[in-house]
Length: 280
Image 1: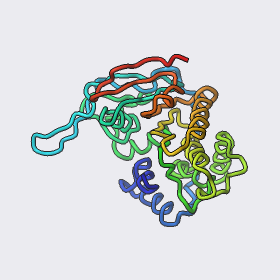
Image 2: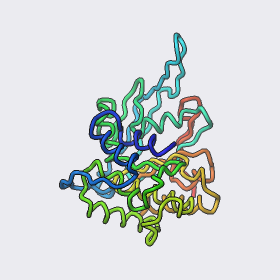
Image 3: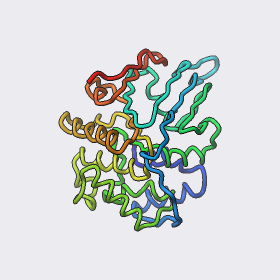
């Protein structure tokens, strides 16, 4: 996924004037526009009430490919995820795990069923509301780092705060804190081509943290990394889950990576075939 596609997906760009303005400034200039400043009360992951964070109720997703041709990607799936859980989603290609991820990430809607995200019925939201809830509730980390090449680490981490109108000084402070949290203190002004693959993924994780979203949704985050770096990144996710109380939802096909979680949900043929706690 290229940076343009990433930001169109997360911000919902192109669906309203404000999104187009932000995206154009970021990708055409690859520089730093100033967002409209206003006060904002932040809710940290630790403040989330201990109720079900994600409730998936009898969700079915059908893709219609033509006349009388359709593909059932998810078939009456029900599952819940509590705050502060670390859940790994596994399954072979075509099992439905990617469709499940897209629905959890508010990137797609089910054909049938109901999805409640922190008490909000996602199926009732319009495009701008979906973009807003993604920005507030979910931090995305993908296999590709999706960093702007001519923008340094701190500026990349500041990007999600633009829509929220966070003042420049506060953006800078929060981005610096998140980079320090992921072990990149002293590397804030380096550009992506000056960072290793593991360091670039740490920048992406810091970007996912900066809006204090209660969920990190990580899709194959170690796919482009060597074994040693993969372990380092997974240990960082464990630390964020245990110390910062952030819910981690990890999509992976690697069994050893899934073992870093506390719970593994396995998909096959659009259905959940197992949902088990990880034995440490």
